[in-house]
Image (cartoon, rainbow, N blue to C red; front, side):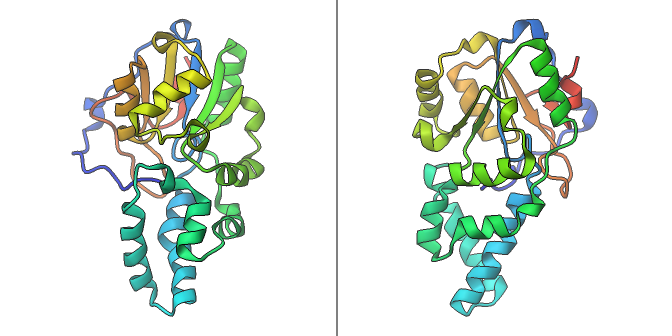
Length: 235
C-alpha cells in the first residue's frame, strides 16, 4: 500500500533538482519497488477501488460508503508495519487480500527503462538490492508477474527488518542485516517521507521518482534529485 499524495507545491520542471553524481562513487544501490520500479497504478486501484468494491459487497454497503470507511481505516496505521501487512488486512477486513491481489495481478507492470537500468547496473558491477515496505506475499505476487527477481543481490521486505522505511529504526536495523557504507550508497524511492528517513540516517545519494503511476501526473521533489524514468540515471 502507498501513502497519500504529498501536499507540497509542485515545482516547475526547470526548478527541479537533477541528479549530480558519478557511478564511480556508488557501490551499493537500494531500490524501492512500488512506484519506483513498478507502476503504482496497480496498488492505487487495488486499495482505492478493488478492495472497497469487495468490502462493500461483503458488508452490504454502497461502494462510496465502503471507500470512505476504508480510506480512513488505512490511514489509521499509515507508516507502520501494519500498513502493508496483508495478513493484518485480511483479518481486519474479513477478506482474502492475497487472493484479491492475485485476481488483478494482470495490472502489475514495470516502469519504462527499469529493465535496461538493472542490466546497466549489472554491467557496472554494482550491488543492487530491492528494499520494499511490501509484505512478502505481495512481493511474490508481483515478482511472479514481472520476473525481475534475479536482477537483485537480495530482496528485503520491511517485515524482515522489523520497521517501515518511514521509521528511523528501519535504516539502523537494515545496516545490521546488510552492512553497507552510507557514503557510497544510492537509494531511489517515490515517497519523500521515506527519503527523509534515509537522509536522516545519513545515506548520501538519494533519488526521488517523480512518475510513480502511469495514470497520474509526475510530481517532482523540492528536496531531492528527481527523475521521471531510470533512463535519466544511465550515464
